[in-house]
Amino acid sequence: MNNSLKILIVANEIVPFYKRGGLGDVIGALPEALRKIEVDARVIVPYYNDIKNKYHLKEEGEFEIDFDSRKDRIGVYSALSPQAETPVYFLENKQHLCFYNVRGKKKKIEQFVFFDLAVAHFIKWVSEHHKWSPSIIHCNDWHTGLIPLILKQKVKLETPTLLTIHNLMYQGRGSLRVLDLLDMKDEETEELKRGKLVTEINILGEGLIHATRVSTVSPTYAKEIVSKDDDRRNIIYSFIRRREEKKLPDEEIIGILNGIDYNIWSPVADELIFHKFNVDNWEVGKEDNKEDLLRSLGLQNKPTFCFVGRMAIQKGLDVLIKAINHISHLDVNVIILGSGDTRIESSILEIAKKFPWVKAEFVYSEELAHKIYAGSDFIIIPSRYEPCGLIQMIAMKYGTIPIASRTGGLQDSIEHGENGFLFEKGRSIRLKKTIEHALNVWKNKEQYKKMVEKAMKTDFSWDKSAVLYKKLYQEMVDKS
Ligand code: GLC
View (cartoon, helix red, strand yellow):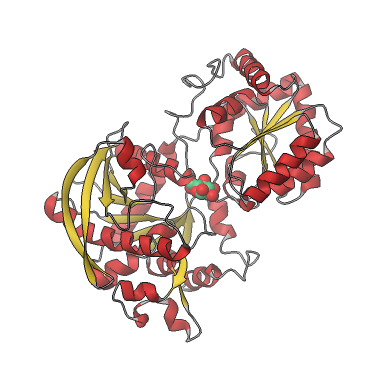
């Protein structure tokens, strides 16, 4: 890969080393797909203790940075990702980069300001020590939002930057003290030029202003976040408008749909499920998996709907709870798996107490998730917004038909009536009607079979998305 594009992908998480959500899956899979098409992609993440406890990494060296008026040491470690040998770098610092869950918002902001500064210096370090100079720095989410600014202002590097937004709701808003930590003047950040009233920094916002290009994880979400219907009170809106208003094609936010990693998500090779299957024998495969799942949860053999995901407002569980109340006349099971917000958990517990055919498990269990994908007939995804969503893609591969809100990446990956169903987001009555409709389809065996097979055959592999990223990187390099 001597003359190829060199991409440094920066993030807070990467599968299998450290995962918090869908972002970790993306960062694990995208570089591998890029390397297959001759893009020299490498990844850099913080070296959390959770990783240290599980993996033995290679020590590569160290460097120093100035932070909060003193010198801090950064250790550089590396590993190859298990599948396609993507080099992954890990930055170690005993004070700032040991845990993701540091206490307090202020500390968390400081942690990622530190990380972003360290990454900017790492770019110089890796060019010198490994003779590898990235052509693009690919930042992901707010954790990496200050890198474009720091590169320009502090490290004086012209390397183009791409910022990918996986979730606009998390922005990293904090006190302006951040600028003292970096020894940066107020005027050096865009946000502050907007008036004296501004008292906080918005890290994602700075990224939106300073990154060479911005992308997000589905074409529909890219449109939604610039539309006037989006929540205008949201501070991020002004940053996005400012990018859009420049009217340069380069300022447009581009949407590239994520894929899923079929090395992990494939019912024919899944060690965690009861009976492996593929599109040729799914009927017997799913029947056995369903029986196993329902038996373990003490449920009767009925059409089975499930929910798998974080218990967060974004995921629309309130809509699901209302819909469950509306469908008590139907003879079905509902299985809910996930953890998170305790208030949401307790309202789910209530509904599970009310109806014995509703089962809820408040754990993060990879194994149970696989079993649920394999053994359910339908998966309900009532998200209020969904930048991409990976669950619908996984479920489809396991022959489980999605019933999802018409929004973001759900809309871009599901063809209504073909490989899944879409309903108007936030509307429990619409969800109820769609569940009834889905049940009628299920009863018509031929129609249902057609849908399941179409869903299982829909291709969400990373290869297609990797080609689009490569094109974008190339455009950026050509223009720089
Ligand atoms: C975030 C988004 C989700 C997306 C994932 C990976 O978790 O909420 O929609 O699939 O990032 O991009």
